[in-house]
Length: 449
Image 1 (cartoon, helix red, strand yellow):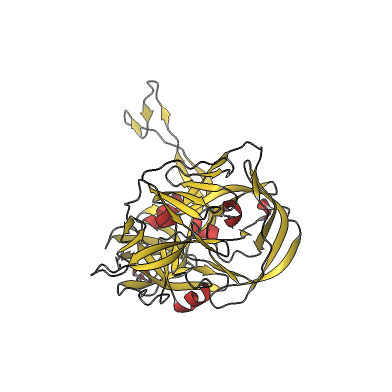
Image 2: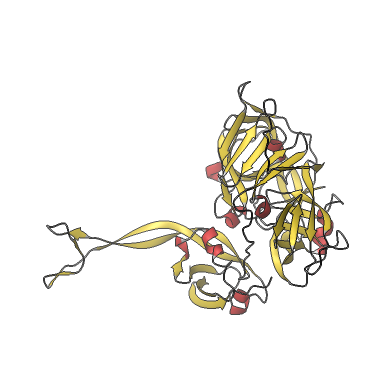
């Protein structure tokens, strides 16, 4: 059985079949030394463009997945898939398995970095709602098949990823860089680190963590995977994500620091999986958790699967804080709605002065025109019990219309969620639509950890 933790908070897939290893990615042209591509950084996740059989789609670049996965294809994104057969997938949580497809003999391409005869898993239903959680269309996830055939350099600051040809790559001297050995289990990379849970003493615990560029949070820990790994007293129950078989729950807290070599990262947020999810997820028994995008984005990162090592160098965001959603609301993109916008017609007098209302006591009537545009809509996916928003009366499936006087169709999902992440006791005023009725709510953000 093969399990994968996917994006945003936490998503889990269990593969019920195994397949042969994939063909190589190669650089077009015998002398090509590298290929780079710009990426979007959304919720600490790397989103790259990649062609599948000639059709350009958007993929999350994920060291934590050993298969290429498609899960959000519409009629507009239709592609030809080859050598298709049906399989069954299961997931954590309560629920039934789901049907999926395996497709072989596909071509994946990032500019001049091309993989022939590639195998793809296709989920027929996107139960994760990845695009809703990201605010843009995401078609799939790619990981091991890209990383194994190149030295990959990720520059989070400039939003660019480089694929270097191992035949020509020469590692440059870097005084402030540190390299660490990687251990692989089922083609996924693990690193040794230390964590300090003790807020009084200086006790540290050795841990083995999955390097997971497809996890948006800082750290996940498996409670009781070591005797010392226990959820701190200060924590709150949280929704960690969606799996094929249902919602995944756990606890959120902070630890004093994580140490990766000599790099010390203070007060990171940590998510602890519930015991049942931990038991099912720990196929690699030495694993104690994961280190995700909210840690990795603080470095320049070189990933070298061939030589089993990762190299890190601090970037400008290394000392940035670790914020979290204090509202208790899990908000997702809900498609687009048609919004009527008013545009007031203006004109100038003979002296090129803008005329608005009255001139020499003569009333000038302005003509108002309207335009209709499709704008983003957002809804509540989950509401945590006893959270500020939950106690205020906001419910699952409520549609958000405005927040603190701003209509939400003027905001990106990132901007909207950002309003829940700063300001202890800050007042939040929201207008929501419930069953066709507009209702006003207000609550204050509460810092629990």
